[in-house]
Structure formats: C-alpha cells, structure tokens
Length: 332
Image 1: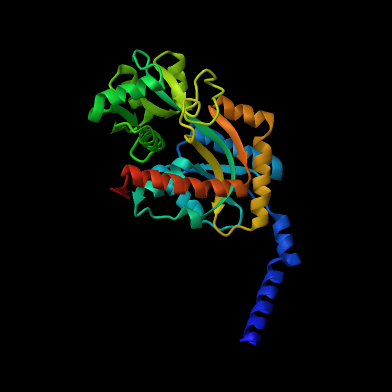
Image 2: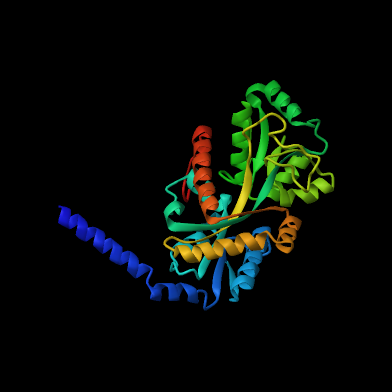
C-alpha cells in the first residue's frame, strides 16, 4: 500500500510538472492570439448589451485582440449561457450574465437543465442595479410605513404588486420583502416592466419593485413615486430616497448584479488575467461614468469575490423561493 501511495504521489507530481511545463507557460503567454467571443444572452440595445460592449472594449484595450459581442437571447439567458458552458475552455468564449440569468432560474425552476456551479467559471463582477420600490404618483402611500400600515389594515387582502415574470428579480425581491415585513402581497406577473409600471401609475397595482434603469424616466416625469431602494447604499440617481436598511430592515440588501463568466475548466492563469483586466478597466473613470449613466452602480470584484457572491446568492434565493413557495417546472 505504501508503494502504491508513493507511486501515486509521484504520478501526481509528474502531472503537475507537465501542466506547468515551459510549453504550457508558452501557451498561456500566447493567449490571446485571436479574437474573443463575448456572448450576451439578451437582445441588443438594452443596458445589459451596453455593459457587454463596455467589457469588450476593456478586454480589447488590455490584450490587443478584438472582442466580438454576440447577442443570443432566449429562455431568460439560458440559450446563451448554455452555449458558453459547451464551448472550449480556452479563454476565447466568455459570457455576460448575472442574478436574473444565473441564480434565480435554478433557484425557482424544478428540472432546470444546467448546473451553473459546475458548468461555468466566474471571472469578475462588473456592476449592479439598484432596485427601487415605487407607487403611483397619485397614491396616498407616501412611505414604507404607509405601505405596511395599508397592507396590515387590509388583512388577508393585502396589497397587489406586479413583476416582469414569476421567479424574476422583482418577484423574488417582493416576496423577500413581504416575508421580512410579515404582510400579505398578491402577485401579478407581466410580460415586461413597461405594462406593470403603467398599472402602478394608474393605481391598478398598489406598488412594485423595479430595476432602476427602466423606472428612472417615469420617476422624473412624476408618473410614479419612489419610496425606498433595496441596496445597502443610496442611489446616485435618487439620493433623497432612503434605503430599506435605513428604514429598519437591517438585513435587507438586494441588488441585481452582472459579471463575466467562462466555461468550466479554464486555465486559472487566464482567468486571473481576465479578472484583473476587467476589475481595473471598470474602475477607470470613463467606464464608471458609462455604467453610471446607464443606471448601473459600478461594482468591480475579482474572481474569488465574484465566485463567493455566486455561491451565497444561490443559497440565499433558493431559501427565499422555498419559504415563499415559488417553484415552477422548467418549460411549463
């Protein structure tokens, strides 16, 4: 047994030497020597697409190779994410995705066809959205205290709210909020945020949580009124709107984040180089201003911190989904 253990150790050492041989280092040093493909699993023209193109510019500037942004929308990010998971782990195929596409679907859907914890390599976080709690401009709900008082006065009827789909970020944020405040909330799912925000403005819904970018124009026009943000910090777009933590929900911090991934099994040195380039690039004034003007909060984080965030968020939202009874069959 000792001889077998010794031979096994020697074999492992020889494998390690082979992996870190001069030839392997030469191959790593040559990367990248051709264009890199960045898949954005959402339609062109949106803020996620903008973030993807910004990442592409950062990578191109750092490594001198063009980045081809490929929009592959469908199935809430699944189609594009699967394409990256199936790609060679050579550093030439990357993915931009985040909470709404990587964490919430497997947390809320039974039979989800991919395990992102093993199929992808988290590389770096780049930004996050603030979520904002809004009511109609003509609503007599003017604060979170007003909202909670109204909900409790309504008893089992509670309050109505809308989201852009069952299991989506707005839906799960609201379920978390309603559980934390012990109020009854009645969910209405919409195909998109535009229709539900119109119903909030018209008083057909009592309130809604929304990602900040699509709701800012309505706030500025006085169509809806913001009464709180879900982030642990105030939004630069809405500096007078308090956070839910400030209003007493000390452990309530929710943002919708974005980051860059690659296929599982990537060379750690390539991952490290990409991670450093993205974090440094996003931290520069130009990219930070571009992200902020689109409604993002720049939030660069290294591969280790980003991987930790992915694990923690999957655990957190899986628990919220279980506690709230949010469970659908994939494809139904």
